[in-house]
Length: 411
Image 1 (spheres, rainbow, N blue to C red):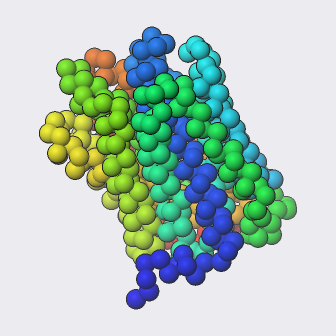
Image 2: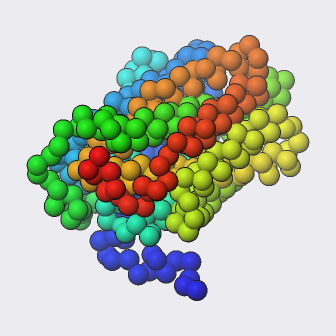
């Protein structure tokens, strides 16, 4: 039996480079957007924001991400995956750094909206780039590696907050967001567009084909199931750091900012494993049913995590919530990349992923609003219903079409 990482060692230099570029982009995307979650409490106090208003700030970012993702998906199909990846990284990098210079809630909101535009574009272009460079038998593992970098970025954001905020305040935390700009320049200088994309540059069929026939059915399933998963994810993980640091009298767990960050890093270790292991299972067995299995497990874990009070049990459940409650995103990236043809893949993935962000944008606000009346634990546990809804929708996925990236090209 070949070693677990033989597929990676045997990859071409181009395949490895695209994998590194997409992974770094997604990792730093995660770090930049989640820095807000770690400074949320301080922002609330200084700017006198309610929990609902704080959640609305993240909701605005997600709406902007939907717009950016759809726009950059179209851009990636017309002008190239590498160009789209580079520009999206520059936008979210600079916007994150500008968050540290804001003095009012309105200024911070504007910066978060601009950040969202770049954040939305990065995923579609990076995932399409990897999908078109790696063969079907390793595509699940390669895209799982890209997705796993989100966990690293989330943990990195926690580390930045723990190291910087106690000494320099919450604004200084955002200055770390400039790092992706440097990576963007490296990506642009050393990367070439995938040969598969170059072969199919012209003629380009109209994007409207994505909403007709078999492609239209696939789009409806992908967009709605992803909307449900994104609602669950942002509703749960936007508020987890605040939940952990909130005093026990207010329904939280009373951890310090340093302990919250350390605990979050442990949780992200489970998330990382969830991403990577998904890829191995999906390449060996079924993309569809691995995805559904993760979602059902996440639906069970979310309320357990929200209501358990024992510190040891919380520490055990945390990585499991991360494993199942985030790892399924490896499934969405490979499933979506294989359900749509090359000449429309960027547009399809940008739309399917980011239209879900429009629905999910309500999640941080809804959880914040419910927590004001029913408590933070109950508010977090409502994400379980969204996980189950996503699993139900995913039952309609055409499993026979997966692993053949252009199976729907003539639909």
